[in-house]
Length: 282
Image (cartoon, rainbow, N blue to C red):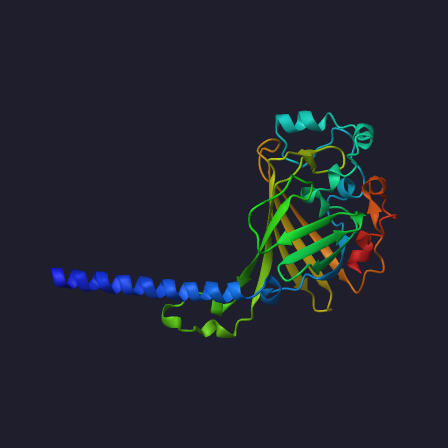
C-alpha cells in the first residue's frame, strides 16, 4: 500500500519530469526558430525541373472534352458546374488562367524553376501559364485577397534527425548515425475559384490543398521531384482529389518556354517540349 508521503513524492517526481521535458522541447524549438528555412532544409528543391507525364496523359497533355470529368470525385454540384464550361466565355472575361491555379498547375506539362526568395520563402516559377507560387515558412496565416495561387504555408518534415527528437535526459540513441532526410509540406488556402482541369472541372474558393514534396536520387545520378497533392473541396468534391506528379531535374533552364495562359491553353505535345514516355524510360 502506498502512503501519503509516497504519493506526494511520486507527484513531485512527475512534475519535475514534465518540467524537464518542457525545457528540452522548448530548447529544440528555440534552436529551430533561430535558423532560417533555407538553413534547415533537409532536401534541395532549387533548380530546374521538367514534368514527366507518365499518367493521365490524355487529361494533362490535351484538353478533355466538355463533360469529361473521369477520375475526379465530383459531387452533383461539381458536375453541374463542370457542365457549364465555356472556353470562349472564359477568354472574353479574361479568365484564361482558371486552369493554372495552385490545385492544377503542378499537373501541367512544362517546366518549373525553384529558388529562394529570401531565407524563408520558396518561389516556384512555371513556364506553362507563366505562374508564380510562393511558399512561406515564416507566416502560417493567409492574408490579402483570394488568388488562383492562394496562400501557401510551408514547413519541413524531418526523418532520421535524432537532434529533433525529445529524448529523456538528452540521451542519444543508437540511431545517431542515421542521416537527416525529410520532405516539404505545403498547405494552400485563400484560393479564388478555378479549374482542376482545362475543361472546366471546378474547384471552389473553399478548396484547401496539402502537398508533400520529396526528392529521389537514382543510382545513375538522376534526381526526381515527387509531389503528392490532396485537394479538399466541400463545395464540389465528394472526397479528396489525390494525385502524384513527377519531375526530373535538368542542368539549367535553357529549355524553358514561357507561355501565357492563352497560349498554354493551345499547348500540344510537341509545343510543350515535354519528354515522351519513351524518353522518360531512357
